[in-house]
Figure 1 (cartoon, rainbow, N blue to C red):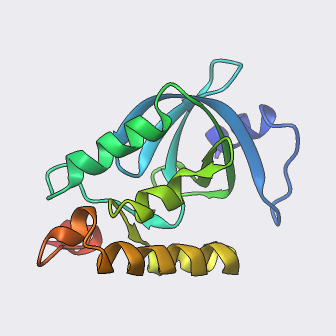
Figure 2: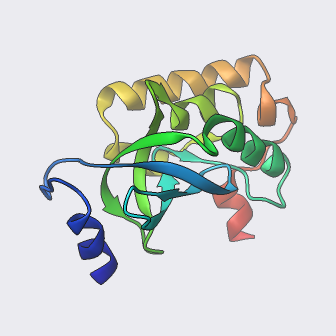
Amino acid sequence: MLCFISLLANIAFFDANANTMLEGKVVSVADGDTLTVLDNRQTSYKVRLLGIDAPEKKQAFGEKSKQSLVELAHGKNVRIVFNKKDKYGRIVGQVFVGALDICHQQIKSGLAWHYKKYQNEQSIRDREAYSASEISAQSQQLGLWSDPRPVAPWDYRNR
């Protein structure tokens, strides 16, 4: 909780019923759906990308998914729109590089699943767009969808 309060002190506004915005530079990428952002006060934040679940590092396409996120975001200034933290204390948010939604881009590239378990945390528009992009990537056999039997990360973690 203290970490969240500390975060709020660095953000211009906060409303528990609305989204909060954080801006900073991506300084590291852990995997295909997690990165670290450093704000202008040199405070770092772990960020879990909203609406997606990428393959784990040791899973098929795990490294490709991570590399894609590195190319999309590492060293770049980002804007994160969020309203929650996960059980590990990470901000869960939609991440933008300029106008590009990199969460959505990971799905479009076939390097992440639309995380339907949490889709109710997305706007209807984003939920529909992410779902349609997953279907499109699957039909085109992009990325992980080129595997005849892709294993969803939530199933992989449960093994």
